[in-house]
Each structure stands twice: as C-alpha cells, then as structure tokens.
Image (cartoon, rainbow, N blue to C red; front, side, top):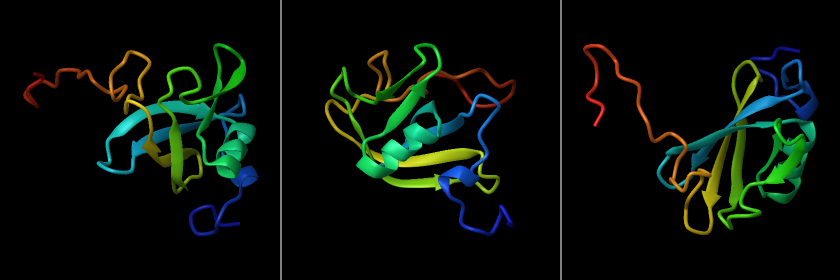
Length: 122
C-alpha cells in the first residue's frame, strides 16, 4: 500500500500509541479552525455513520458528541486525512450559537504568542 496515493480506510489510518488521531475542526463557511480534539476508530466511525461529530475524551475516558450539553453541534460535511494518514481535517457546519469552544468563544484559537519582529498581537 502506498500511504501517499492510495485511498485509506478507518483501519489504515495512523493512530498514536493510545489508539487516537488528532482531528482539526474547520468551519465550512469561512474556513476558520474552530478546535482540535482526539478521535479513535469508534468516534470516527460514529462521525461517518451519523454526520454528528464525535470525539474521545482522554480525561473522562468516554465518547462525547460535540454540543450534547451546549447545543452547539457540529455536522461533518467532509472528513479528510493528511498525506501521512495521521491527522484528520473535518469540515463542518456548526449549529446553535456558532460557538465551538467550551470558554464561550467561537474558536478555541483566540490567543496569540508573540513573534519577535513578527506580527502585532492585538
């Protein structure tokens, strides 16, 4: 199998030693990265079968469907994997208030680290 050219199945993806793969969540409308979370085979299978985005919580040791408490649910439109098959990009629509982060922010990526001689961090 050529990992860079062949189509991969759920079982062909490269999971880490804990059986997890990182999933980058991107808004289908504006391309914003909303969050990053972990999936295992079962969470990915549930996502592909239902269209609702499921994750595996390492801290709680359980599955969770995004928005089950907040009402801000994610619905997968595309599930892509990278050239190495070790990361996922899930392009989604977000329902509810449009908030993806547990802090109440739209995206989990709302802070910057300063770069010397680089961009201004307003």
